[in-house]
Length: 245
View 1 (spheres, rainbow, N blue to C red):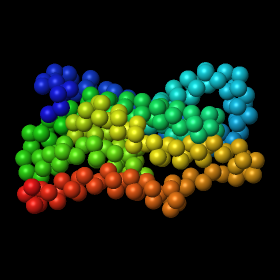
View 2 (cartoon, rainbow, N blue to C red):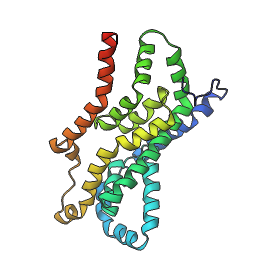
View 3 (cartoon, one colour):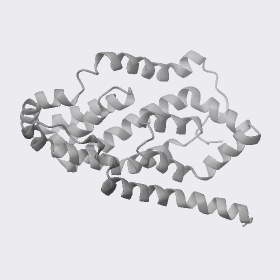
View 4 (cartoon, helix red, strand yellow):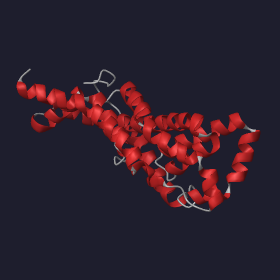
């Protein structure tokens, strides 16, 4: 069992799940109230004002941007991709990618902490106490946590919210979650930040950015290569286990 987890939990179910409930409620409200505002068109229409504000208040713009991005991720609000593009548009690929990765990691950590504070601790304890298939799954995850965490971050098809919540339910430590999140989202974040850095030319041509670029061979194949490297230790352990080594 994770040493960070308490042996007993006397909190009421409502108090224990209050942070996660708050995230779900705000996410539901945001899905209906903000979906028409946190869009690429909004960025296009306000691009000159944003650039002017950045030029006059650079440090404040960085702070406000990171805070807004954290809130978008933490409450699973619509517009995370647009926020990433905005980071590139306002701050170039670098330091824009660093701002995006930092904000996304903080937001993801807040979701992870809320899930762990609520259902996560109980679920991890139940899995540890289980027998049979559930126990074997939990043992497999524990033995390959670093690799599994990197994989769910690197694979583009895994929803970001799922990648934040599942580790909390299987007893992953906070430190391990933060490190793998920060490093694991770098490839995708850099790709989309670089797309955002080129939005000036896209706006001038009256076009929309290619958000499917991450699935193009020159981008996807290197990411899949990283996935293979992350999965290799898991495969080696499985082979050695079958051989009884």
